[in-house]
Amino acid sequence: IVSNMNCEEHSILGNLSTQLCKPHVVVGFSIFIFACSLRNNTRLMTFWELPYPRGLPIIGNIHQMGNFPHVKLTEWSKQFGDFYRIKMGRYDALVVNGHENISNRNCLAKKSAAFAGRPPFETSKLIEEGLSISFSNYSPEWERQKQCTIKALKLYTSGSDKRSTMEETVSSHAKQLAEDLINSADQQGLVGDLHDTVIYSTTSVSSTICFGRSFTRQDPELKEFLRNFQSFDKAMGASQIINFWPFLKYFPVLGKSFRNLKTYMDQYWNFTLSMLEQHWDTYVPNNMRDLADCLWAQSNQINRQLTDQQRRIAYGASDAFGAGFDTISAMITWSIFYMAVFPEHQRKIREEIDRLETSMFSLRHHGDVCPYTQAWLYEVLRHISVSPLLVPHYTVKQVEVNGTMIPAGVVVLFNVANADRDTRVWENPEQFEPERFLARDPTTGGARVVASETSKILNWGAGKRRCPGAELSRHELFIYIANLVKLCYIEQ
Image (tube, rainbow, N blue to C red; front, side):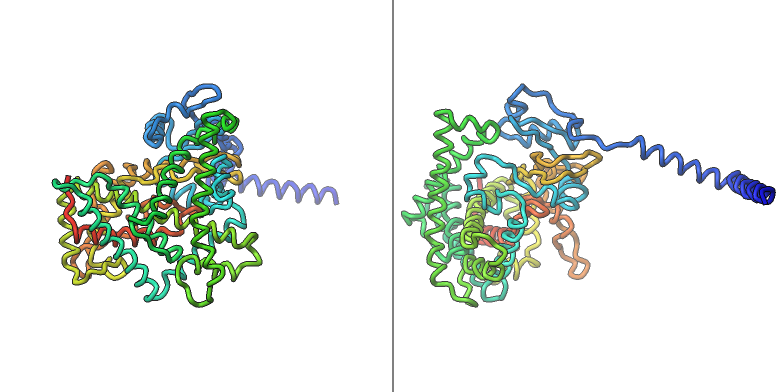
C-alpha cells in the first residue's frame, strides 16, 4: 500500500512539475507573484505625509493667505500639487485643487458623504443655534432637514400657476431695479451705489418668495434690516480669527466683535421669525402661498422624524431667505460690471432679448431661444467664482483620496476658483468666452447650450452640500439680466 501511495505521489508531483514548466504557466505565475509583492509593498500615504508650505508655530499658514486666499492656494498648488495640507491655527486642513478632483473623480461626487461635514467653528455655532442647513454638521437629522427643503422648493415651483407667480414677482422687481438705477444716476449716467440698489431689490424678491412679504426701497423696516445685515457681515469677518483660536473671544476687542456677531444674528433671526409667525396660525393645507408654507407642509409629512420641528423649519426658511438675497445680489452686480466691460456681448444679448415678443422673460419659456444669454451668464459665474472656496467642509469619517488616507475631523478647502480656471478642463480659462458653452444644434442649425459644459460650474457646490436653491437662483438671475438689458444700456 505504501509503495502504491509513493508511486501515486510521484506521479502527481511529476504531472504538476510538467504543467508548471509550460511557458504560459511560468509567465502567468510570475505575474501573479509580482502583483502580490507589489500589493504588499504599496501602502496609502497618510494625511500627515502630504506636502505643505512652511508656516509659523501656532499661527500656521493663515498670515500667508492674504485677502484672496484662493489665489495663494492656487499658487501653492503649482509647488505642492492638487492635494496638500496647511495649518490654520488649531486646525489642520486639506486643500483640494483641480476640477476633476473636486467634482467628479474624488471628493464631492463619489465620496460626497465623507466630506459632508462642517467644521465646529465658533461662528457656526452662533448661526441659528447650530441648526442651519448651510453651517450645521452632517447628521441623519440634517439629511432629513435638507430633503424637506428640497421637496418644499419643488412644491413651490411645481405647477404652471406657481411658476408664473414666481416669474412675475422676479420680473416686476427687475423692472423696478432698472428704474431705480436710471433714477439714481447723475447727469452723466453714473450710478454711485450699484450694489446697495441691487441688494434692496433682491431682498424684496427673496422675502416675497419665502414669506409672501414684499418691500419697497423706502420701507424703513427693510432699511433697518439691511443696515443690521451689513454690520453682521463686518462682525463675521472680524470674528473669523476666533474660529482658529477660540480663547481670543475673551479678549476685549475681538470679544466685542464676537458678541456683536451674536447680537446681529439675533436681529436677523427676529426679522425672519416675525414674518414666519403668521404662517403657523394661518397655514391652510393645499394652499401654498410661499416657500414657508411649502416647508411647513413638507415638515408635517415627516414630523415624527424631525426634532424641534418648528425651529428647524424656521431655520430652513431663514437659510433660503439669506441665500436668496445675498448671493444673487453679488451675481447680478458682477453681471452688470461684465456687461459694461464687454459691450459687444451686451449687444448680442440685447439682440436675443429684443426678438422675444414679450415683456415677461422666463428661462423656462425662453431659454431655448436665448442660448447666448444663458452661455454668457454661465461664463460670468465661471469667471468670477462668487464662492471661491465654498463654505469649508469637514471629514466625518476616514476616507481615501488620490492615494492618501484622510482621517475624520479634517477641515477641507475646495478651491473652486482654481477649478473654474483649470487648464485641464477649460481652454483659455483666463479669457472671457461665452462661446465655450455653445455648440451648433443639428436640428435647427442655430446655437444651443451644451449641458455637459454648464454642469462643470461649481458656484453652488456639489454632492450632498450642493445648494438646494441652485436652479431657482439661476432662473432668477436670467430674468433680472434679461429685463436690465431690455430696459437699460450699461457702459463704463
